[in-house]
Image 1 (cartoon, rainbow, N blue to C red):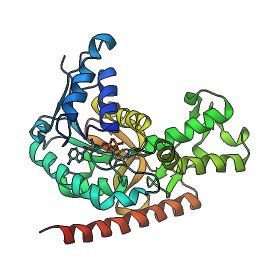
Image 2: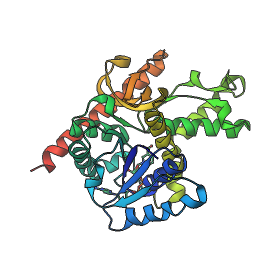
Image 3: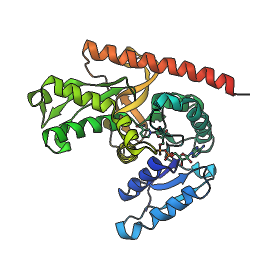
Image 4: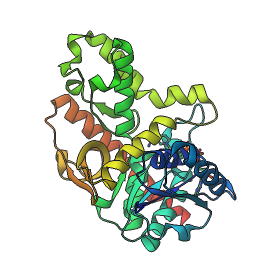
Length: 316
Ligand code: TXD
């Protein structure tokens, strides 16, 4: 079968689960790359032995060799450290910048036609870094976080109201962190505003739990952070790209004037297809939402500056 090739860099929790879902859904031939000897190879071998049971024909291979990037349609970067209890996403900045920057350069050298989908935290900053270090256009570099944050919000509302999650729609923009911007007006249950079913204080509680969704899981898991729903988020975006669906999803993308913001990577609704970010959709925002988005942009910009000075001190 002529499936496109997706390389997942980092065969940890998110990377391996992404590989599993890509194969189960018949979306891609998958290559896992990890620096830890045997890890990617072992997980790929294990996953490929699920094929006869699950009935998928996608191949899954694992390696430590970055040469395997060649020929990838899409490269998913999950390599890096995950949070431990008490750590913020920003605490990961220096370590993960030292991992993601060189990977983006290798993608540019070995898979010059690929798209890059970044998962590693701190997400918005790692997307900015991958964009800069790959030299790719902004259409071809993006990050996954909004699909996850939106899914958390939808799941919490569905659980609270006892309705199927598919009945709940929502949109979360902004930064993947404390400055995420859930659009209240976008939350609907069977097409009706959520406020018809939940008082504002209850909606506030759900929004706060969504913002804290990652930390809630880190505290429970102790050894690492969330990975099942994040991998589902990656695969939702990968499917929209590989199958050229032109689907509008919350995507961390580089802004050049949209929402009045530029020189920053932030979660916004974007249409995804085989070319990557085809279009950024500008929704009508309330003045409060606009201000919240600007505050998130400000924080990401400060992070990008921080990143630049880190790189200046760590580079020869
Ligand atoms: O919404 C989101 N964007 C996120 C992001 C949701 C969940 C997880 N999020 C972040 O993704 C998390 O904070 C981490 O920064 C990454 C990966 O999380 P995961 O839970 O998969 O971490 P693991 O299990 O520790 O896996 C990371 C793997 C591990 O196997 C390392 O050996 C490998 O990355 N690694 C590398 N692989 C290849 N190349 C290099 N240089 C490398 N360095 C580490």
